[in-house]
Image 1: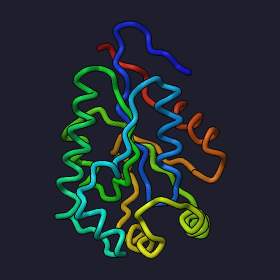
Image 2 (image 1 turned 90 degrees about the vertical axis):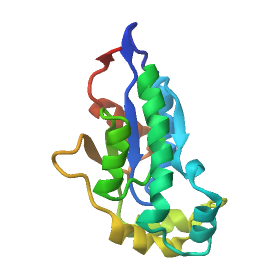
Image 3 (image 1 turned 45 degrees about the vertical axis):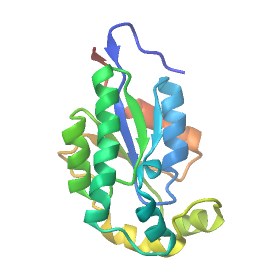
Image 4 (image 1 turned 135 degrees about the vertical axis):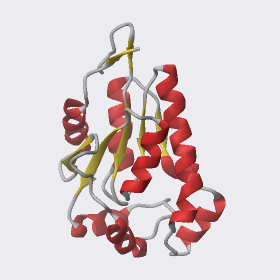
Length: 178
């Protein structure tokens, strides 16, 4: 576990990517190593959004806006208190990430990537999640990779989650004074 020195703020990190990249697993590991709070962005979805996705209907920007505002509020609160936090959130489009940056300007994005074949395999084998494999193509079509001017890094999510989390940790900017 990595500990912060007195007077430094914890980072705000969004582990992003399409469904099946391992966002939640890697984000939990990263939060644990940083000793900061973790949030699953899926938990911020409205019942209507969950029902829509469960039925295999992709969300549109209007569906996502209130959800992203809620995720942004969580990031903002954790940035302001200095605790920092890690969120597992698809953050598929630049405009979505811009909304999160408006709420927490120093947020750092870790974009997890893996082949479509691996994604299909992972989604096909998981249980207890409302996102069906049929929505993967929609997510891949919507995805706008991190632009060079966005604070973040792209990581291959093929290795073991512990390895990916360690690589993510090494890429985070240095702590800031709180």
